[in-house]
Amino acid sequence: MPKPRKVKKIEKIIFPIIAFLICAFITPGAIPLLGMLFFGNLLKESGVTKRLAKTASGSLNDICVILIGLTVGASTQTDVFLTASAIKIFVLGVISFAVATFGGVLFAKFMNLFLKTKINPLIGSAGVSAVPNAARVSEMVGRQNDPSNHLLMHAMGPNVAGVIGSAIAAGILLSFFG
Figure 1: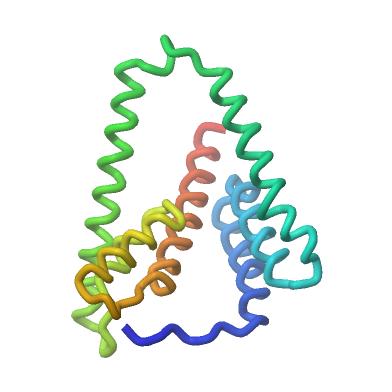
Figure 2: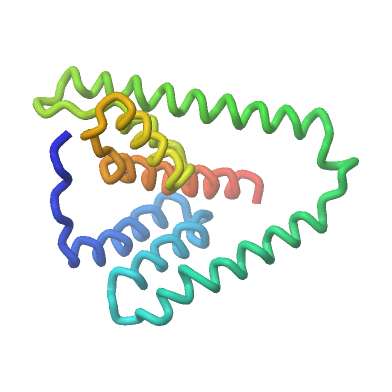
């Protein structure tokens, strides 16, 4: 695949703003999820709030993950958590990742039928919302076939799109049940 183009700083600043506005109109229930995602990108890319961006991406993020893990872990008893329905949910999750990965590869192959500049179908497999692991897997599998093949930056696009799509889907589900 060709080397990705250099993205201008103004594009990196405008993208989170416009994407947040579009997503907020589509699913207002996803505003907290998408707002924090895009706010973090805006902090990082603006360059104005370097200390705040460093704190948000480092220690504050670690503290939040620890607190969420502790509260979820402390509120989950084994008799409630390890049930047949919970195992079914895990199996459905594995199946959904497999279907999304397979569908992404097939869709990339379908797109190649119409594109002048072909794309590597492995990029389609990174469309699941497992950031950045799905993109790393695409990179590793691509490099096994061709060591000069670098797909990581190409695969991060569908990977982040998968995160945004998952947040929108979560917002739609929240609007149904909220």
